[in-house]
Image 1: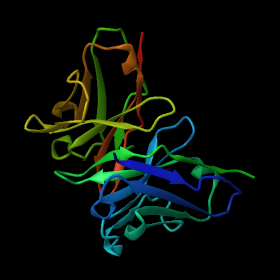
Image 2: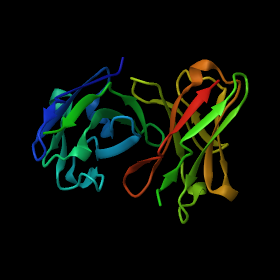
Image 3: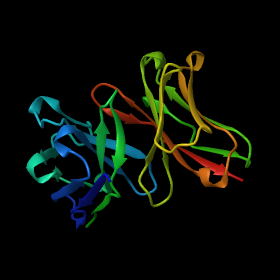
Amino acid sequence: EVQLVESGGDLVQPGGSLRLSCAASGFIFSSYSMNWVRQAPGKGLEWVSYISSSSSSSFIYYADSVKGRFTISRDNAKNSLYLQMNSLGDEDTAVYYCVREDCGGDCFLDYWGQGTLVTVSS
Amino acid sequence: QAVLTQPSSLSASPGASASLTCTLRSGINVGTYRIYWYQQKPGSPPQFLLKYRSDSDKQQGSGVPSRFSGSKDASANAGILLISGLQSEDEADYYCVIWHNRAWVFGGGTKLTVL
């Protein structure tokens, strides 16, 4: 069974930093590209970042809203995905989902974790 | 103008059909994209429903009833999620998604009320 378990969400002050983790199990983690998607309270979904299965620097993408502040990374030996978030602002308050991307045929977001809540507030 | 535009809400009666639209911004041709649809219920992460590019290029999510289907309206430059035989359990938020310019782009979502 595919499982994605996020952790690291917390209350942080504006301008602060936080590192999210996602522990993956039930599939060959190193074979899949991964994404972070967030959802502000009561709002819609917003894609945050993508990292290819190889974690090559040529295949990492960010939403404009987080570019230069957030860094996605992965450790295939630990079956883990990370999101380092710096210079956090109120607009970053959201539930952050770790999402697997299935590229068996074309690529799509197939499995989602339960999410971890990040609250940016003074 | 947003890349993907969805009506914020839609209401329909049990047993009826609901057509949820996802309009692509002018200049982005719906014919060239696969459109992915997700359902999200309160307190839960989104779940993949289906993807649709054409009648020969579509895929239903695992366990998703055939009551859910996808199509396109080229004249409106829109993707469509059709839900037939509405049930109370279909009440949820629905999001369309495309892969565009090296990013996953989400529509704003449609809240479907079944009453």
